[in-house]
Image (cartoon, rainbow, N blue to C red; front, top):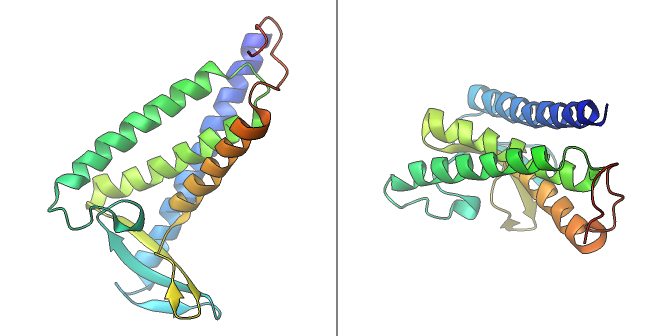
Length: 174
């Protein structure tokens, strides 16, 4: 019974990661279709929808590196995703909601941007936040999922890790 419950938890987290990828890809497809490249659509005084192509990583890191970075980021995202899936599998029997949610959001975001890199060689970014004359670098749903997931992982490591109740039959955390 416990093994089945753990498997069910793992499946739910994988479905959630897939939903993040679907939401990310659907929003990017809408932007590609309806917003011209480098165009913008003001939403309010501090948010625009835009259409950007980022060949680099966060904050366009390595964007002008000449093309090799595409495959570097494909390999990196694939390896990180594999580690996250294994990690989620290993903790499937525990009641580790915040940790599992954080890992799942990072996984879904990594896979969402991985799809773009494989298909196009770049990631489509489209949310632009302004504070007066200063613009935060454009981002997308996958980036948002990674950021929220990372925040949950930090919260878990600072406040929760090791304090959860061990699953039946498991040794308590150190």
